[in-house]
Amino acid sequence: MEPRQEEMLMDQEWPPERREEKRSGGEGAPSGRNGFEEGCERLGQGDTPSQETAEATIQLPNSFKREGPKDEAPKEPGLRPSQNYSGLDKDGSSSSRGEEMVILKRPVKEEEMSPSGERKYEDSLMGELSEMVQDMVKKSSWWERHGVDDTIIALNFLMLSVGFLLLRSDSVFSFLLGITVLGMANYTITVKGSHLASHNCLVESKSWGKVLTIFFVEVCSAFTAEQGSYNHVKMHHGYTNVIGLGDSSTWKLPFLNRYVYMFIAPLSVPVITPLVAIGLLKEVELKTAIRTLCCIFLGLYSHYWLLLNVSGFQSVWSALSCMLVTRSLLAHPYIHVNIFQHIGLPMFAPEKKPKRIHMMSYGVLNLPRNALLDWTFGHSLISCHVEHHLFPTLSDNMCLKIKPVVSQYLKEKELPYNEDSYLSRFKLFVNKYEELMVHAPPITELVGIQ
Image (cartoon, rainbow, N blue to C red):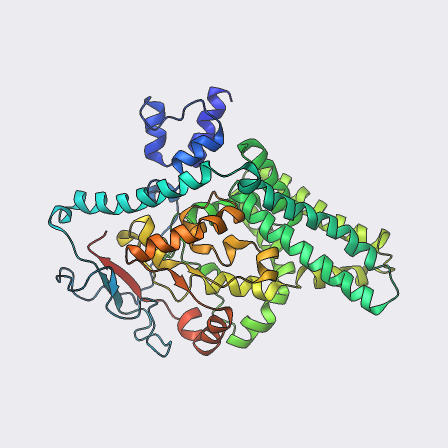
C-alpha cells in the first residue's frame, strides 16, 4: 500500500489519537505486517471515539433529569444496579419515563480513587479480555476466520438460482418452495452478507472489503454504503446505547401503535429501505450518490429481470409482487431482533458514557441460538451479539468460537452477560410498547467507573 493510501485509510478508520501517533511516528503507527496481524493487535483495544470525531449533534430530551446520589459509597461487590438495570420495574414498566437515572455501583479500591486509577482499571479489564481473544484468533485458521461464513454466503447465491427455477413450476408446492428459498437466500445475502462486509469480516484485504461492502449494501440491499457504515459501524458500535448517538432510536416510530409496528410495518421494509437510502444521498458527494443510485437500480432491476426471463412471470405487477414477498419474508424477525437486543437495556448520557467493556456488557443482549436466524442473520446478530459488540471485526463463526471465553470472563468479573429468549422479549415489547418505544428512556449512570 502506498504511503498516501495508508494515511487516507488511517484517517477514515483510526481514532484521532492513533492518527496523531502515526503522523508523529509514535507507537500507534502500524508496521508493515499484513492486515490480519495488525487487526489482532488492535482487536478490542481502546475506547470509543471522542464526541468531536462523531460529528453528530447530541440532543437530549428535555425531560431528562440527573438525580440520585453522586458520591455515595458502594456497599456491595461487583457492579450492581440500584434498580433493574434495564431501566424497568419488575413488571417491565418504566418507573420514571425518562426522569430518573439508574445508579450502578462498584467498589473502588484506594489506588483507583483518582480518575487515572479508574481509567487504568477499566482499560485493564478490556485489555485482559482482548489478549485472550487475540490468542484464539491467532491460533485459528483462515477457514475459521473467514471461510465458514464466506461459504454460507456463496451457497445462498446458488440457492437463488434454485429459487428462480422453482418459480417456473406449475405446482403450488414448488412455487411456494421457490418463494421460501428466494426469501431465505435474500436475507442471508442482504443481512448477513451486508453486516459482515460493513465490518470487513469477509476478507482480510481492506480494499476488497470496501468493494464487497458496496456490492452487498448497495447492489444487494438497496442502501447506501457510506451512510450505512457510518451510522452502524461508527455511531452504533462506537456509542452503543448512548443517548442521541448510538441509542437505536432510529428503529422507533412513536406514531405507530404496538400492533401496527410489531406485525404490519415490517412488511414495508423492502419499499422503505431504498427510499431512505435516496434521502440520505444528500449527505454524500455527487459522484458517490450517482454510484449508489446506479448500484441500487442494478440490484432491483436484476431481481425483476430474472423473475420475467427465468421464472416466467408474465406481467409487471406479478413480478413486483413476488419481489415484495421474497424481500419481506423475514422482515418481522429482522425488525424485532434489532430492537430486542438494545432497547430496554441501560442507556447512557454522552458526557457520562462508561468504558467500552461496561458499555457493551450492560447495553447489549444475546438471544438463544436459532437454526433459521443463525443461518440467515448470522451468529453476531443473534446469539453472539455481546461478543460482536466487543470485537466487531470478527466474523460470525469467530464470534461463536469466542463466546464461551467472553461469557465466562464477564461473569467472573461480575459484569452482566445479558441473555433472553425471543418470545420473552416479544411479550415485553408488546405489553410495554409505550414505555420502550415511545417515551424517553431513563439514563443509567455507572458510579465510579466514568
